[in-house]
Amino acid sequence: MGQHITLQQAVQQRNALREAGKRLVFTNGHFDLLHVGHLDYLEQAWALGDALFVGLNGDASTRRLKGEGRPLVPAVERARLLAALPPVTAVIIFEEDTAINIISALQPEIYVKGGDYALPDASHAVKPLPERPTVEAYGGKVVLIDYLPGHSTSELIERVKALK
Image 1: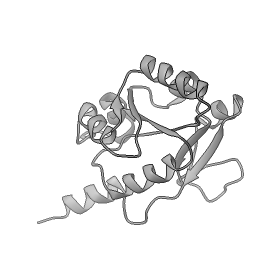
Image 2 (image 1 turned 180 degrees about the vertical axis):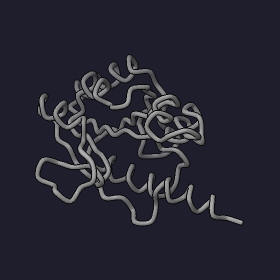
Image 3 (image 1 turned 180 degrees about the horizontal axis):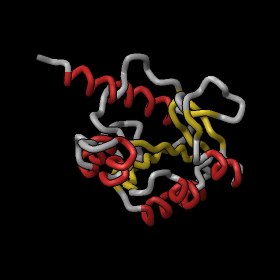
């Protein structure tokens, strides 16, 4: 079972992984209303390395990025749920709008995001990936994982709102 840790603790664990010759995979997101699409994504991310650290947008960050009324689940509860999932080694809550600071501190070998983000040669993707230049600057690799179709938090919220 994973754990909810501070960035300082994450850096210490990261250093131990590096010394042991293990590859760190990092991803980040809101993970509001945890669902099987999240689990599928995290399992695929974890399979790319030896440990998976998850950066979790805190409540203020989620509110800024997702709008009023979000998150539906407080960050400490989301962190506890994520840390209980077998693929997750550690969860770090952060309040910035991007994970650039965490990525700079941890320098994971692999940075994973969902397939809705763009790489330089991907014209089909919806949005640019702000962390990409940081990852590439230290020699890390960016991997995009397609979402499980029909499984998004936004879709789930809309289905709940449509209930009579």
